[in-house]
Image 1 (tube, rainbow, N blue to C red):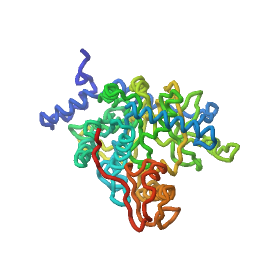
Image 2: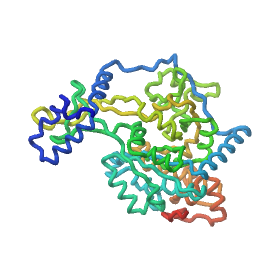
Image 3: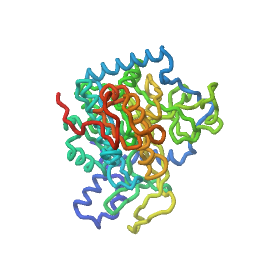
Length: 469
């Protein structure tokens, strides 16, 4: 039997305020200590003190991308991929993975971000938007589709209660599987010692979106997938309501390439845009931070005048289950220097004004070089990328609803539905489209063609109609 971590010298320091605690508080603190891998923290702290790794520009080159179809040959490939993806859906091979551990604090919304009411007519939440797309994919494929939702320890209960209160948006409750993201202690930047948030609490923070892979294994999600016969997992994050959830063509392109990891990318036009870049680095597909690309390379132009390094990662992926099983414990940690409130040796709370601590987190895209095959697939920014991050300015509710309105205008035009036009071709009055009304422009046109002209705010879709199998 392995030694209890309570016997470690490091544990004595973390119990130095134990006299202030009730028996239950002490038991909770001891439980936290038992979860700490002190050897890992020591190794990560030593690495944090080493010089930061720099990108070697000589090892960088553009990566091949399956671009949006612009020729007959490319259209044929995408059409074949679409059919292949639909077959995978109909065979019950597909599940959905949503990363939803964040709060809406930057939006001035003190709840899980997925609860944010983004719908411009009825205020449908982000969760509701995604649920409507999964529900419609399920109806079209004739198969139930499991939805795995990664929460954080802080928002798990409220998220589950929200789904229960909304009757799981029409999805079978047993197909909506919640699991919890892991955490890591923060350590002193000077000493590497674990910091106290309070006498009976260690300061921890989420271990990054890369921690998804560890949680999939630890929380039994991979086993659940295997039990259901699911071997393709469609991944995205909670802040982007334009995601084409379970897009058949993307699934099919993943399968055509025999890929283990596939990523959607958008075409960057601004070298300074704050999205990660997918590149070939030392012969392997890799995502690097935009700030790590040397300035001279960031501004390089290709023969067509566009950026040479243009594939911007938007955190939409397809993973093969076998790959996730193989790499769940393989991701490296990154460091982040942060200002973290802590208790000093006298037990007084100190609130620093500058970084005093190191947090450790993993990035899911670090698994990309570990894949035997990848597929990097271009998508249209206007159709699939409108992240919700800030209360105002860029990536705000205003810009996201504007993107939704422009998309609604394109879909209405394709369906031959007349409407008063506003800025950028968007309808003057608010329009909200849920998945049941159409999953893309062609699907929407097939379902809605022949409708009378719009004269005011309009909602398309059915909310929370139960799935019948």
